[in-house]
Image 1 (cartoon, helix red, strand yellow):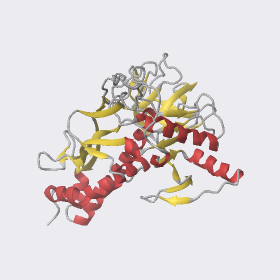
Image 2 (cartoon, rainbow, N blue to C red):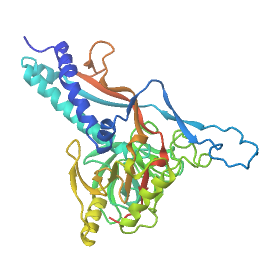
Image 3 (cartoon, rainbow, N blue to C red):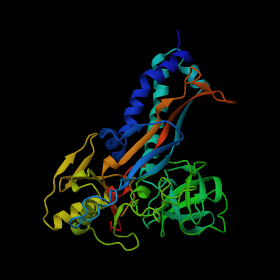
Length: 411
């Protein structure tokens, strides 16, 4: 007897769901460490409301003269952050001819599904990793200038010849950076080219809009405002320019000055990496928050900055250890803290993370859509069946000033 769609559903759900969760949860440094440190929080609702301790009792340790009036009673101060829920999906599709060709061999059908599953997992974990390093816009590349015709130069927004585009054609929206909302082009197909004189060459299918300006960016089509928050906006002293957002998690820095991370250096003025500048971030966290240097569990950076740290240690004859973290990630150490490179981390910076202050809020863990009793469903108007993986949640912060970043590092 050949494998039918009912049996195929069982294969998808029973045999492939656990590996999907395992691979996705250990796919990135940040995600795996948050999972390891029990920083994932299951919640419900459209928005996750987080209570924050923002002030201490002023009527504590107050001196008075003998017989003086006792201080007026005080109290702790509290606020709240609101983390919006975000909905992430991944889809696979098996064509009718593939199903027919493999119906008499369970092993062949499983391999067909496995091929699609592995491709979906690989793409999903890269997307999650990218978003966890981003600022909610999920920019894939930033416009620098036009080369000729429909070909432009793009970079990472900080002068580095790098984009998150992959070889081949990608469907994107071109967003006006002046308001982070106007779509200059929608559902536009772009093709990644070679490195050029002013950036990475990217060719558009349509004519380049006359209003395009340096800093405008491309993101995955139809995702604007729906992608995950990331470190570059959480570990910052500024409000994010996210569509519809009034400050990070609804807390503008102007009226909540305590809601800002510890920032040393500037991308506008890059300098060589130095041990004193690294130590400044540690000192700012320890002196300005309730956390100590011991609470910093991870230093996350790019490969280029990691290499500069190794070079610096060599030049200064400074000894460092190497270590292997859970998941097999290799790290060098600074004062016992792992310095871990990530290919999708923003360049020219080092993040100093108190992982207890970061939370993965989720209302649904990775699962297959099967509310109708079947994972595989017919694709409308096509000879194919598809399945959809989903996850509801977002990365949030419960103590923004506990984390720090060293900016403007020459790579």
